[in-house]
Image (cartoon, rainbow, N blue to C red; front, top):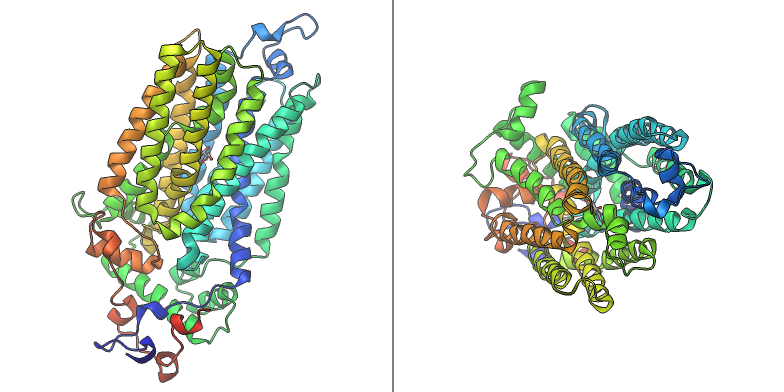
Length: 537
Ligand code: BGC
């Protein structure tokens, strides 16, 4: 098979379906990843704000001159409402976003998400009482929902297969930067004795939305959106822009034909049949068939549930109040900031590991690492929790736990949900999975204060027994259910999932293309195109 052009069966070598990755492609995807910043920032700023003196006195109607705020905390029900309402809005935002992404395009949906988000931020900034703050967070949540569901879809669809995992991990990296920026800004404004203490961290978020919304105007739409709309010529045009190749080049011809053939194939298996039917399609098939849509939807939604079950947001949302409770801590704000810095610094490890080691091992090792750290924190907490040295050890293990999360489950869950759905249900599948992330995020935000606050469940460090047990579930779950998708195009992932089980998936190799199966024939010029091996330097 000279040059890998035609296989013994006469088929076009599936490895040749790609153009070389250009700097421009990297830049486009990196810019889209910026959406993570306001996901992270928006969920992160609230932890510090809830502990700020000015915020507490204003929102609790206390006399600022005479009240010693160290004696006051925001009551559990308010804390849980303020934190969780964002995730509630995001849950519904993400659900709607799937439809919008198919009707109006991925890019347009993200741009509208930025707009909605800005409205929510304006309301929050103006607030000095609970009602407006909650309404603002709900509306901003819708915007974050649009962005968080659709950015993953968009990035997975435009990124070349070899770097798709790393690029989607870039989104997670931006989430961590957002969280860190939020805690730095909280740290900088917490002592202010005016409303700037909470208004500055809130208002700053508008900047991220403005940058993302404006930048996206200049990025192309996803070619898979146009294929879905039946507009192959426009798909060709945007694919050519994304890959940095002429629209009539063989690379574009082959990649486009494969996307199109895969879509045509999937449509024969899952016909669209109207709006409700297309939602129903996400739940079609047998629970016992590894490739059914139902199984993929359950896989995506449960994977995001598991990511939240790792308990990571306990640290990021309630870290400041938890560290305050440990008693011997001088500056809980500083500690929260340190955990967010560990989060940022550990995430880039995944850029390399997710492509080299693969999704499955990364999630397995990550779950194991988190289980060990969490049980250690819990055991130290119950045996020697008042000893300052023991508290330092607990904090060190919390940081190692964040390291494991950030380098594995943080990015891994987002990468996998962008890959496992076939095109006809992809936008809805990713939207449902993202909504599941926010639903569990919300549930955890609601119940955590009741589990840990001193006047409620007062679990203290024992709460880490719960997170440790849930991470054990995540380990077992990964072993049995997560397929290996590394190095495959989205269309090859579709085929791999048809032909393997999660535990045998890593050994699967592409052997035919959808274009072949759908009878696409190539001109001599295309067959003679250079192979990937030949163009790679
Ligand atoms: C999770 C967020 C979490 C963040 C921490 C994301 O992947 O979905 O809930 O706050 O990681 O870095």
